[in-house]
Each structure stands twice: as structure tokens, then as C-alpha cells.
Amino acid sequence: MSILDTKKKSQKKQIRRTIWSYLIVSILMIVINKVYGLFGHGVHSAVMTWMFLYPLLGGVLLFILMDRLLPDTTTRFSGYRLFYNSYNSGIAVLTTGSFLKGVFDIAGTNSSYIALFYAVGWLFIVLGLTVLLGLILKGRKICLFEEREQ
Image (cartoon, rainbow, N blue to C red):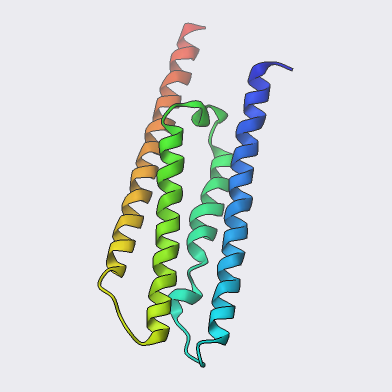
């Protein structure tokens, strides 16, 4: 077994660990919504009800697609960590913002700061996806260059 095979396996393992983490967070968000709904005196918030979709669709779905469609070389570039951290931070900020908006809706109040959660969350996601797109294009250039050498 070569070092490259070990790196590929560890990269796949990291992506699968991320998928499981997002799946657990999605389930946790559903449980939090149900428990909070029990103490909400019959008042529910649609924002809190659907907050599990950020980690489910944004996290699980994206990383499953990355695991299936992208070459393993994408995760070895130095910018991958920037994508990973900013994208995950964006999902976390959006989920937290939805939770707080739901709490405020149930309490019957409002806050102007909730808009900042959504703006910053989407900004981090766009930054992360831009970095990922750059990594994919960089990987394709390297693959094309290696094919020309042979």
C-alpha cells in the first residue's frame, strides 16, 4: 500500500465523517424544534421548523456530491481547508440564525440583527463555493497538463 492510497482513504474518510456530522446535526435540529415546540404554548415558527434543511441539504447533499463527483485531488490542494472552514461556518451561521429567528417568532418579538446572520451565512457559503470552484478548475488544469506530458 503506497502513501497515495493512504491519503486517498483518509480524504474519503474525512468527507464521510463530515456527511455523518451534518446528518447528526440535522437530526439534532429536528429534536430541538420538537422539544422547543412542547414549551412554546402551541406557538410554532416555520423558520425553526425548517432549520434542519441547512445542514441536510447544504451539508449532507453537497458533501455526498463531492464524494461521488469530484476527483480525490480536490481535497489535497491548500485552498481546500479555506473552502471547508468557510462553507461549514456559513451553514452553522444560517442554522443558528434560523434558530434565533424561530425563538423570537415564538416569543412574539423581533430583532434587526437576524438579517446579519443570513447575510454573513450566505457570504461564507458563497466564499466557500467560489474557493471550491477554483480548486476544481485548478485540478482540471493539472490533469490536462499531466496528460500532455505523457
